[in-house]
Amino acid sequence: MENQKIAHIFQEIGDILEILGDSRFRIRSYHKAAQVIHAYPYHLRDIYEKDPKLLDDIPGIGKALMEKIIEILTTGDCQTYLRLVKQVKPGLLDVLRLRGIGPKKTKLFYDELGIDSVIKLKDAARRSLLRELPGMGEKSEADVLESIESYGRLTARIPLHDAMITAEGILAYMHKSKLVKKATYAGSLRRRRRTIGDIDILASGPSEIIDYFCEFPDISYVEAKGDTKATVILESGVQVDLRVVPEESFGAALYYFTGSKAHNIATRKIAQKLGLKINEYGVFKGEKSIAGTTEEEIFTTIKLPYIIPEMREDTGEIEFMRKHPNYKTVSVADIKGELHSHTDWSDGDSTLEEMAAAAKALGYEYLAITDHSPSLKVVHGLDANRLEAQIREIDKLNKELTGLTLLKGVEVDILRDGSLDMPDDVLSQLDIVVASVHTYFKLEEKEQTERLIRAIRHPYVNILGHPTGKLVGQREAYDVDLNKLMHAAKDTGTAIELNCNPKRLDLDAKHLRAARDMGVLIALDTDAHNTAHLPFVKYGVSIARRGWLEPKNVLNTMSLPKLKKHLNLKK
DNA sequence: GCCGTTTTCGGCCCGACTGTTTTCAGTCG
Ligand SMILES: Nc1nc2c(ncn2[C@H]2C[C@H](O)[C@@H](COP(=O)(O)OP(=O)(O)OP(=O)(O)O)O2)c(=O)[nH]1
Ligand SMILES: [Mg+2]
Ligand SMILES: [Mg+2]
Ligand SMILES: [Zn+2]
Image 1 (cartoon, protein in one colour):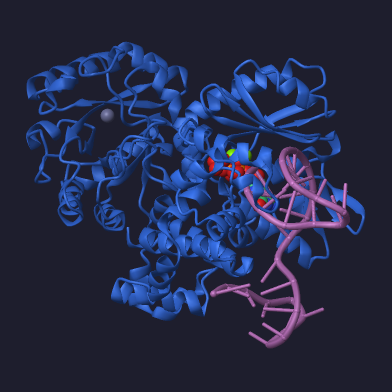
Image 2: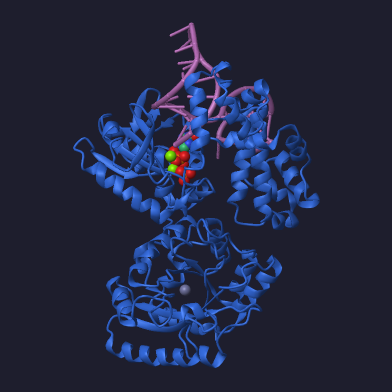
């Protein structure tokens, strides 16, 4: 949380410096530092307390920003920031956020017309005052109005799964055209971020592809359209960017368009040092193209091993892959089973038999049935009697099943004080216990953390379920110190869940990086409430890859015998 | 403001689209 506060201050200092017309490189340093800190796996305070000089070792943090971090950690404030905030009206930052309006126009409108809020900007545009300004005209004034009007209509970041479905629809349409040689999605979707800002589509072939793309039925309007790219807004409010390149540039373009921006900049710098230039058309030595058809070629020319899209965030992956060129992150094929699922015994839709058949069809060795506990009445949580009945039912089913073993389990509710919603003598009969929070999300950090640690330390708990409670677009993480949870998890051999439901995916790459470094096992659980949810594991795997996890970091890559042994260790 | 396997000074990724412009600035990817 403190890291996020520092990242926010640096981001805003950068934004304000932009409006004030400061050096763009100085601005870049602040923005870069903000991004680095935002994605940093450890508390800066912990680093500082170990040795303040270590802060300077973080890439993107130099002497000056290190001093500012220390100032914020020790005084709670940053004098530079406070001074800058006084120089710029807060409404200017809102103006800056409008599409098509950057720092130069924000400053122009303010200097010339005293515009310091979106409301005032709208008023000035309506009164035709903007068109008189240098570099402005009738069209650009109308564009300002349009930008203000559309601000609310544009969709915020959407869940990965929703973006994937939309992208697949667009790609199916693209592949119907004979002009299109290759087409795929790129951007944050290919890097599998939990949320997607816009959908980026790459195609190879002639530039007429752009016209065909702009005829896609779900388009609300075309925002920009040229010879090599177009930007459209769908009826749903989602933005789609299309980029078209010649076939021989497909690999270079895919590399460019996959990003991230920070990763691109980092590898383009490496190319520079080698006397090369990377752009979306290829790698160039002088005028001559020396690579471009595949991504692999691009990496080879700059002497790097292939780096998977999920890792391309400039969070240390370049250095790391140089040192470990054969590093392999976890993949869907490594997943041996599911450890968190529900049936129609509680709030699931599918029967035990149906869930077992679906798990078997996925090639799983095991499926843990973990229905809810009794305090959760709305989801028909199982009391001790019904759970014992389910245990007998599963024992019976296991005798009939071949190739798949059902594990007897429960998703036990963690009560307000950190105790569990099921007596120990019932839990002791189970193969696996997932413990998770469904109430009292709003406790303050210390209390919430202690509550969850108590659950982690419970001898029968194997997995802490959906540990942050985050829901895309609905609920922020509850106030909890994940690093402390991970220490307790490490101590006790408890796994932490990465809930694979695309609405949740509630651990992000930085948390997983920390878990990996600490040797905490992560369980990739779909929390399936019907058979169709089981394949959601692929989203969890993607996020795990973003956190650099190897198969050995993931609990459900274990074979059944190994898993059983592991689950028994704690008791 | 950051950074250094040619550098502690002098660079900082590279290109497309739009509107306003007679040659390019601003914004965005
Ligand atoms: N070299 C370079 N590439 C960029 C730059 N900005 C964007 N890109 C590339 C990398 C991005 O992943 C890709 C798509 O841009 P987007 O703005 O859509 O970002 P991205 O998809 O990563 O995130 P998003 O979820 O859409 O916010 O274009 C840039 O300034 N320089
Ligand atoms: Mg994007
Ligand atoms: Mg985009
Ligand atoms: Zn559940």
